[in-house]
Image (cartoon, rainbow, N blue to C red; front, side):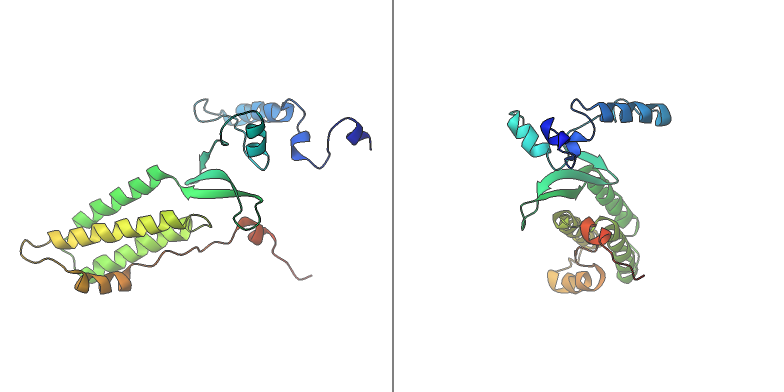
Amino acid sequence: MQAEDQGTNPTDPRDQSGADGEGADSLLKGLEELLRLHPDKTRLIEFGRFAAEDRKRRGEGKPETFDFLGFTHICAKNQRTGGFSIDRKTIRKRLSAKLKAVREELRRRWHEPVAEVGKWLRSVVQGYFNYHAVPGNIDSLQSFRAQVVWHWSRALQRRSQKSRMPWERFGPLVARWIPSAAILHPRPAMRFNARYLR
């Protein structure tokens, strides 16, 4: 009852660190001493369940995003429930860098048999999907797959000055060697709700 009289809610995460963010500041100072954080790469941002509401109340824009472990993390709303959700999208620079590496390797493999190049591409695309196929990232996966298919098509067409590979011949190669984009990982809430027999 006393917490209600003071205007704080013990179940509200915003009230756990103090009114002026003392807990976050002390955490950052402790981490700086321990890890020697880079000042250009480390900053405090308002992110989480209440960030959008708080920023809207103050007349500010959408909550900031941040990049971590190959994903851009974005405050979002769940499409079905309307509750808070974190969307993860592949970082654009990483996607571009991976496509550039694939394009360069395809150029090196121009004169290898089509089946060998197809096996290699399947392992590259499947490996990319194994890491990046998180809920909400299907657009990035489809974009990556489409770009790989396009680069492979261009590489096959440039192998010879006389022959062009029509889609009637190239389509079955894509169906055989390039996996389709699909979400492979569950949402974090489903993963953390695992039940164990006792």
